[in-house]
Length: 184
Image 1 (cartoon, rainbow, N blue to C red):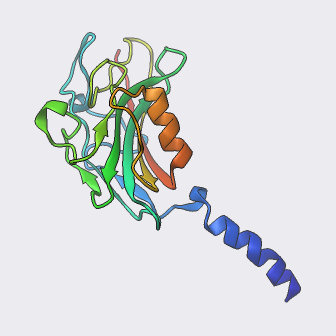
Image 2: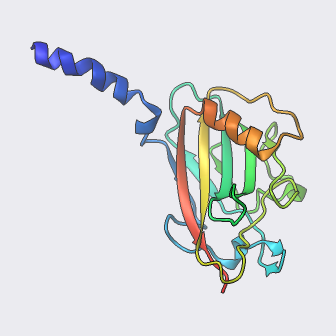
């Protein structure tokens, strides 16, 4: 019995860990983990001619205490030394559990009321699609949803780094789809 109690406490601590929040799941009808994205998710500009459409995303299983969400799209393989932020949407209300395809287009008014779109590395608000340099090989695009304990107090002109720090520092859980893209 003593051995059981000895291991009971560490297991209960682990079970509440954000790392084990496996029930929090991000899904998409438009992109898939480890699969190449279509031209619809390619940027339009910088030599790219895609549809610049953010993918449909939905999530379920948010942990107890979730009061808001954030969605990020990030390319860690961009040759910048710091990756490339394609999309950061924060302060998504807790009752929102999906974003339609194209919701990242700031001009369409499809983002949930009260959410804040951070300027991406293309210098615009909203989603900016994949556009890796030609011949640079396969890039990974990490679409991540974060469950947050509350809305973040960020200035409207917050940098991507500040938004990333604030979200990651307070996240209760996260789930990622890592899609791929390359230009020959």
